[in-house]
Image (cartoon, rainbow, N blue to C red):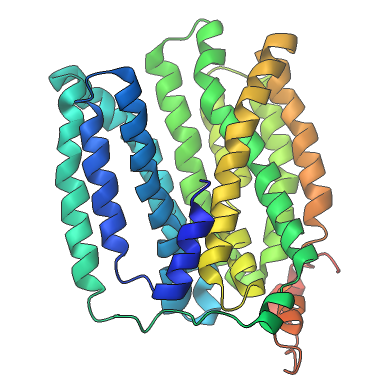
Length: 351
């Protein structure tokens, strides 16, 4: 997460043709984790594997931003993010199956998808060359970055990560305390993550049609009753309410990413690394905070307290810029087109 802005800068400077190398690096090192002879070496291998992931995320986001037409960027970025989320959802299930059959050295099997996909990506992007690189911005362009608006986007991205990561990590513990077995809370945790994957695609399509700001605000507003129901009605209903929480709370990250890329014109890589990296860091910070709240007030009350975070996110999200304001900010000399009828029909909140 910390390395992502740096790799984003490299993507802006040198292009993204070698994205496949980041995938190969990640696959090889994660495959080695099961063969680590000691815990300290395991930590070192895992940390270096994380660098590959840190390189891939901003490079992939830059590529998605540049190859998709303007009117479909939200959908494209959502599909890009959904791929990773889907992997997070099914990864533990596949890992559990392989580890039961082959032991911890089953991580070696990650070489197969890691290397094969890396080769495919390198081959697919061979004609891109360095045409997708962005020249280093001038000092005057750097000064034109709207820091205030970017800070709002970063704040929303970080706040929305708290309940998302907290629930994903602590739902198994909560349901174990309630007396449920792994056969129940394992699939439940997967449903929450899958909900966020499908929610991202839906949110991306809606944002292309009705505007990002309106979609972000409405999803956060609807997250409040979803989290409330998830906290108040644990048990089988959790599959329904948990899916809704994932669908709503975790679906807007790609939209915030596109916002940042547009505001940091010419620095899409840095913007991608900043937003994605800080989102992961916020989740890492929020997880122990969630745990401390659970220890102090109980797991169910810790889930309820996430409503406070979501409410704060809504107030800050109200300050997010619309597409028209972003165009005016980044292209001050261009005439701003009126909003589309469908966007007006949804009655997006005013600036």
